[in-house]
Figure 1: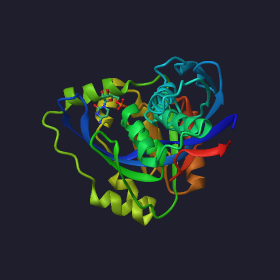
Figure 2: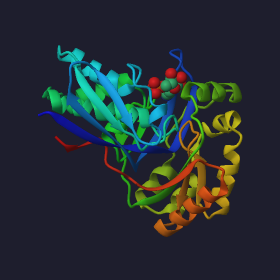
Figure 3: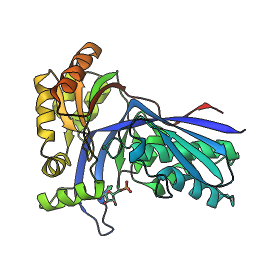
Length: 298
Ligand code: C5P
């Protein structure tokens, strides 16, 4: 096998309940992930040394050194199997960068699956999930996709049932937000955060597949911190609500904002209104759930 391409989805958090900071600096979460159909594609090809390249509108914002989670994924897998991680990883990037949609995590999961296939390492699903958790809190979910409850720091996953297709609009903002900075701001703003737990109403709404049931129970505990660091997002949220969104919220640690729509036509109208408003860089429609990291050629 000379090249393997893996497609991997973005995510939105439909519930992000954050507890107090732990001694290790992470926060315990009840993190309900939903994979959405905006995809990066990572292609692994044999090479003389580990090399990362990236294409797409945000390519200039992607680090091409060993800090890229795709590079770290290749190194961790190679180390486990006594291999040298000589591979060229090309990232075709469509997920907003540093946007709260787990684009970097997605590339880590995709690179892992691609290198496993390219090198014929034959790692088990459990081993791959283990490496994903080492790469970052959101990476295991990028591997599995669909919908899942993440506990611990978000890496311990329980799959969830989704009863239908949800229609979303995602508005990308100018510039990213640093996830650690958003958690620090959460700590500053929040005194005595409660132990996080999954909302039964939210889980029931996902099962129903009904956007009218889901809209009122969407929550993100990091939203206040993201808005505090980037107050202009309030305007984007207001445009979405005025444009007919059933719910408007910050995606993960932001600054991408997420809007739940009634159906595909409403989502398209809403995306046009957001784009025309000038309060965001771009607005994209996408549906959920979406499958996790999947080999598309190889
Ligand atoms: O796990 P990951 O590397 O994606 O986390 C990035 C940063 O986000 C952490 O260093 C930490 O500051 C913050 N974080 C957190 N609690 C979590 C997940 C992430 O505080 N559960």
